[in-house]
Length: 112
Image 1: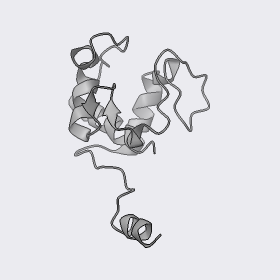
Image 2: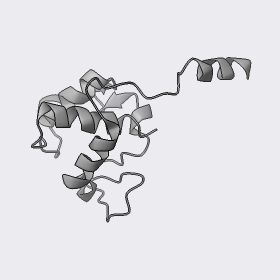
Image 3: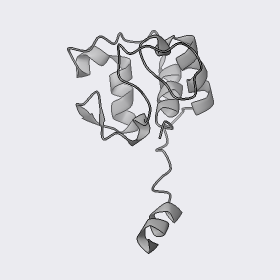
Image 4: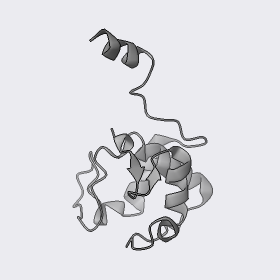
């Protein structure tokens, strides 16, 4: 138990920081882009799809798309061009600029 308390005190449970990203803005972008048409996203009351994986707990997953270690840089690589990382994915590249991708990634890593 002491070890668990020590890890929590060290911030081990805090989501990683995405440089230049704002999670609140990323949440707005996710809703505006219609990501819930394919993904279940906790905290959204919208109809949600199941074509893609649930994003519940995404920030705790070990891998992005089952291929890359789940780090902010790798998440951004995947979001920029999903098919380059996972060629069989049905996920399209979102029509977002770099700042918007950083905001989206900042939100996704908070899904713990």
